[in-house]
Image 1 (cartoon, one colour):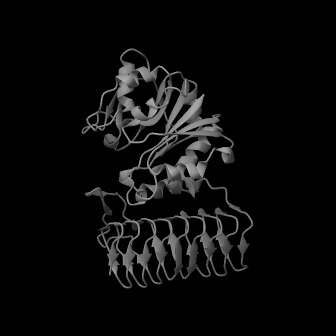
Image 2 (cartoon, rainbow, N blue to C red):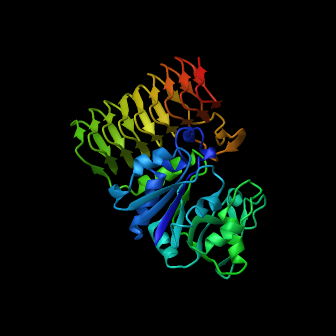
Image 3 (cartoon, helix red, strand yellow):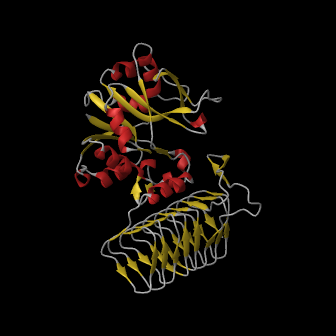
Amino acid sequence: MKCVILAAGEGKRMHPLTFTRPKVMLPLGNKPILEWNLQNAKRAGLQDFIIIVGYKSNMVREYFKDGKKWGVNITYLNQGKPLGTAHALGLLRNFVDDFLVLSGDTIFGKQDIQRMMKHKWAMGTFDVEDPGSYGVVKLRKGKIAHIYEKMKQPSSNCINAGIYRLNKEIFGYIKKTQLSPRGEYEITDSLNLFIEKHSLAAIKMEKWRDVKYPWELLDANREILDNLKGAKSKVVMDKNVTIKSKVDIGQGTKILRGSVIEGPVCIGKNCKIGPNCYIRSFASIGDECHIGHACEVKNSLIMGHTNIPHHNYVGDSVIGEYCNLGSGTKIANLRFDKKPVTFIVNGHGVSTGLKKLGVIMGDNVQTGINSMINVGSFIGNNVYIGPGALATGLIMPHSKIM
């Protein structure tokens, strides 16, 4: 059986992080979301993968290559213009018979994947608090009765989890699928046509993690770090370093004197940590980063090649690649009125439901000394924030704040 992973989308709700990478390549615990799916599917017994790519496909191809590093075989199909999930799966007509489909930006557990593999036709479901952003599923006697895409008033909390067990018969229904009101050819419409004549099993997922908005990366990252075993491989560490709980440190990283690390924490390869810095629980720090003197980092996701070198505070934030924070840069993460933080997403204010949340920062952002970033700011890639300047709200890519 082949495993098909849908990885062609941009993920516009994940801006500014997806201005420079596809959503499936966003990191959790220092691995792309897509890698977690690949590993779990391999543990479930799958070896042959077809990854359907599109937006910035070179990043996926260059990272995973032919799959040999993970002990699997990977073939790529380029969707081209993104015309929907049914259009993407229609490309497989001459490549598969029996197959499993995974949405590449949602993490599925090994055992759930194995349960799906036992069926001839099946779709995964999951219960969520806010079903309006998903396809809502109507069930009848353990079977899928109908799938409703993004209902304004959802009839249940049971949603389409984005995992399917299919065979080549689906291509006939894909061919009959019409353009949806959202302007796409959607596999859920194809499955609704199938359900009219056949049975589609509903398999409730036990482990399922979707990330709709950038701040949800922090919760997903916490879940991953909670399962850390902790490892230190060929790490240079000064004597007066304090490490508490589970900490995973990559090869070639140096931990300098006076540094305190309270796990669970994940630190990548070839980093320089310290001297005299404080890294608190649920921080993920990518490869080749520098966290320096008198810096504090907590509950944050910091991507590779980023420098937070001296007198900086980063809390409850997502920081992109190749960023550099000038000395004294501070990030606010709590409103004075203690109300939940609101972000602007695609022109609309969205409440995060979180009382503590700092900044969502794209790649290659540079800040001057003593600059300030207000709570709930979205900062696009290639932004320059001058010395002593205050950055607040939505800041578009390539902007200068002086």
